Image 1 (cartoon, rainbow, N blue to C red):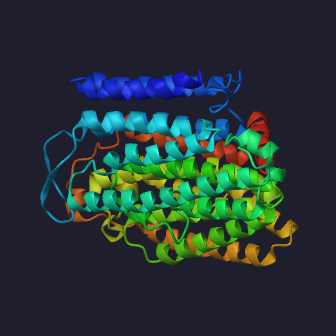
Image 2: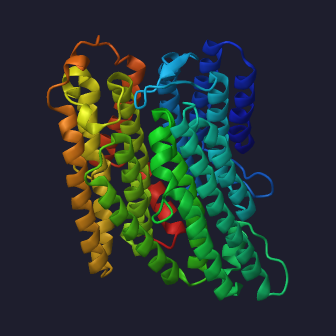
Length: 492
């Protein structure tokens, strides 16, 4: 089953490159997404056997993050069918610079989208640090052509920045692997496997200074891919210049992959008795990321970049939650779910807005509630969800992190956390609320309505419903899964 989860999207991607009919290709994308989601959900009832002698296996963390990826990919695939239909392979006028560009072939886009799913599946299932590193690097290679779908100079610049910055990060993470291997061989004088379970079992025998060096390299390396400040510089451009369906996957699924890499390293540190060392670093990076996000969100004029900086904020919240520990760690894992679905919803809605208004300038987008009423209502709901307001799930997870910070005596961190959340709420509300209200320009009024098709609305509606449900009631099976994942990091 594990092999099928990886190989089916991989071969479907190859088939998408070969097929000549776009309708068949879109059908293949959707069928693969349905198959992947079904297989992933079935793993909740029957745990699949490990593969490759335990190098690939399901555990609580892997199952949770793979489910997030699979569900989000399914909804994005639904949205992509309508999106690709409206992006024919002809010359398009760039609405910012009034020059013409042509999109990449749909075959390449769909193929890379499916390769992206295969690589993102491999990350949470990897139990070997070498495979984990390879799979995270593979996500970069699979997703780079997706960022360059609109072949104009801004998307090219964003793609190169993404490749260069993330390559530096992944190189630093490779140093983490080398340091971990040294830490695993010095005390016993012989080779210790790089498989997660065996390293945790042998963690008391690891060489601590080298293990600390390994964690710093993993945090910096995978933290670059995760978007933690100050290594976040690729993220605003990539999220802003990608098609919105790709932005949703980058923010809601790809960043989680890098987070999983950091969590795996943290598991080793926790087992080796240096959890406090790791927690301090995670706390500092988490708070600094929130600070940087707050600075750039306030006064932001590009609503896709606004969402990108919001992603940096939420990656900071995840890092902070794990760094604080206790119930905050439970809140951080829960928050990963909430952020992924909420940000997916918002980026898909941003695609609807961009498709109609032809601008990312917040000041030129007015009256969404009149022009795109469904998208406008969801945009407001998304604002409150992403800023941690009730009754959405993010309120629960952010509150649990605050509770954990206060209970564990992290009063300064708790104060800074509240301050940054408040600033970000004000910053996002002052940008997103006027977009929904106000009077649209005469040019927009004269355009024909009807851009909100079912496939452009159903995915964000479904994601929004999930967020409301998680804010009112967390199903017992999900609560147990989050608790098990939290326990793997050192207990609830």
